[in-house]
Amino acid sequence: MSHVSDIINFNKSFVENKEYEAYLTSRYPDKKMLIITCMDTRLVELLPKAMNFKNGDVKIIKNAGAVISQPFGSVMRSVMVALYELDAEEVIVVGHYECGMASLNADHMINSIKERGVSEEVLNTLENSGIKLTKWLRGFDNIQEGVSQTVNLINKHPLLPPNVPVHGMIIDPATGALELVVDGYK
Image (cartoon, rainbow, N blue to C red):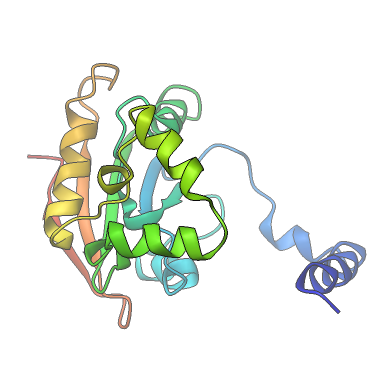
């Protein structure tokens, strides 16, 4: 049986037994916060517990490294939707120690892309179209730098509402300990 079959079978029981009722909430975050964090598997349950959030308290955006690299890309658009349409009033960027984006090697990843079947022709077409994969696939030198850069990008965004606090934190993926890197109230 496949993972998808397992999911569908479990879900049927989940719905029939009305287990969803424990998670009912509105689409608006009760604590009026938006969290941008990494997609690391260790943070799926740990981060909300370590920050004392339950279902419905916050909006959470997850991506590699908790990095916003494009000021007008889809992640930043989601930030704007949370702030303007979904009643979020502050933002917290949460990176974590031992992040894969800190050690991301673009050349290694490009080799993996080739090994998984993407042709040299496709890579050349991208390069000739102005897409520099080695730049696009870069990470950051350290987590403090990554968090600070993302906080800075949000703070300098021309569409950010005035007086929205943007904080930066780092979480230990083993213990859940939080470190404040940028205090958005200052």
